[in-house]
Length: 239
Image (cartoon, rainbow, N blue to C red; front, side, top):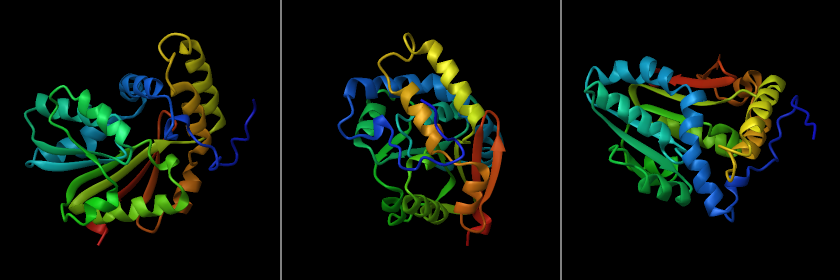
């Protein structure tokens, strides 16, 4: 089926977001995300550029909004531990199924998992040095997007950073993902939502211009390879 990639498919719904989604397929999706995110999420760049320099100055707090199965947080925890750096890492998700799976597969990483919304954390008064998300923004409605961005500003401490990372929608990104995942559809990706939901995710995602227009003043959108966007705001300017 051909899709018009010039228009954001905000009405499309990912299968894993369905409360009645097959639990076995959902858990296999979380499991396989470890490799997918290791390849495409840019966690290494986030760690080297934004997390490690702050952690070298002393213990820091990190918050991942919409952490899913928590694999990105665990990757960060491993890198910090390897370099003898200290951080409190909170993996936050609104889906109880994701949090439950993450807790069961933590393997002693030290990450703390929370079933809550970003709004819930605001009332607790804790501030974070780095607030980030990975592949979250395209899941949100327009109102939810504005809410998460506002909460992020409130949650980051002085001198901290907010960086929301997501897919950049394009025909090329869709075609490449379609081709690559088709190869593994009957093997590595079998029994998961990764292929189908990935294609829907690209259709739901923003272009750089769309995300720039949707974000309030003070946010900066950057394009990164492969077909990724970063929506960034420095905590020092968020007051």
